[in-house]
Image (tube, rainbow over all chains, first blue to last red; front, side, top):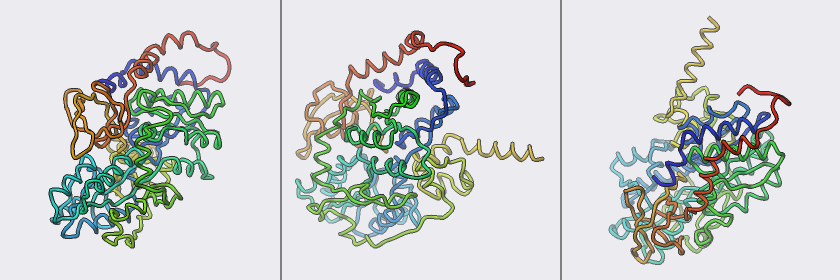
Length: 376
Length: 91
């Protein structure tokens, strides 16, 4: 496929790795922000191909992972109402709330549907005028314009039986939070390519300047990730802390202005709770007052539902780049993609699930076996 | 979740008053909303996320980046640092 296959070229990847080895003289810790990037890195084993001085830690950019437990419970409460058709992106169905996941809710006989695009929900609403169609509007800035358009169009087309359960988060407040932590290890970021396709990257410039960290907006294919790593390492080695754009084929400095306008029309910035991390001030979107009639939390009165995370899970530290999946005693044992205990195991793009799906839990088993043999 | 796939615009149409297009992903075609791409024309490559075109793929930038990547080796030869000076790491 054009613009995909050429960015998976093995020979070019080898050259980039050689170039990174030439560029690096001392240890650096880099964080890839996006869950999609984490998934690619683990799938292709890019972190194992890098010189040992370059450590990649995995960031908070998996919206499915960071959707808070209470929001999942609210989704279930709404989906269980008899006159509701509950629509969601496929990734959310497997995410466990306090009591099971949306697949189980569906198995109970409730009408839960997977949609490809939020606009699909409007057609479902039009075709089912006696039902209330609710869409689980999650995601980062990449997804916000699509979800905003669904609400905007619902009003334009006078569709009254449609509402959204909003759990939208934004990248810049999360990386600022990571940098402000006294335990922070991250020295440079591979920035989120598709988030910046919408938002541009001007808002990252004050972050790079204030915290003296390079931020290289990076794509998702192996060569993108390796080139982003090379650009970040070069900045660090040269003592620079700038915002650079590796992914220039897909985004500009200003982003998609039309999409930004729609976000601003439909949403306002709000405090948001992140699964595994907690509340981050002004870190997401909620529906603006003008669109309150489309707010499912308000319509179904579920805002009072609260929930608690299992104590054993270290996903909060994984999301902040402080720990890796293999540091967790539950990883691959009590906690697997079939029985996830927390944020980073619930979605295929979570760091723990990516490690598990690409066989890295076996490394933990091998390491344990090795240390037991050594003791014996 | 923030996955976006590059595809080529092969047709335009309107659905429920919304500007839509048919996007070809290497042989498979699917509808996408083009409301956020007012300047897109037939044959443009766009990045598509949850059924919405979010940005145009800049063909020149793509060619430039790939050419740069493919030529890295030669560049490296020119920029090779002086050998055996400073700390050495086994990589």
